[in-house]
Image (cartoon, rainbow over all chains, first blue to last red; front, side, top):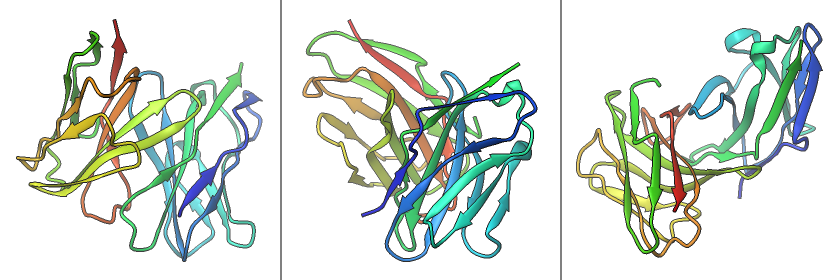
Length: 113
Length: 113
């Protein structure tokens, strides 16, 4: 079975401060990891993915994520948050050869002006 | 949203009624997916289809039905057997059966009258 845990319901951060959204995963074999962002009443937009290679992955809108195999984590980060980053963020995982993604419950990010 | 169109944006269901949500994609993707989103629960897979005329149950298929008669279309029917249909429904597609990433539609909000 594959699963994702996003332990925080909401992350509040002041504009200009670093933003971190936490994600841990469980999967058999090598993981394929993803982050998506959702704005109100919209579908999910792809931010970044880790398949193999460098543990630090850079994605859209200045976001990056760090893969840590020993801690089974894939935390999303942004050095300086913007008010427009306020949205719902989903972490997802699938195992090699599995065509189904498992999503976390999502984290609401609120960036305070 | 990335060539996937969901309609309608809002839908209301009366007691005992079947309703159908539309999902059309012009991305020439083989695989299509239906997810249900409830607040605080993330996305749960209802049905998915890897090729035309074939589909598989996801984690919460009871009370739902789908068809895949054309590559570009994957409609979802919410039947009267689904006792708690109020949710946000998301359709997605990918360019092969083992997706590196999913492309999402903008969603349909279904409510019960």
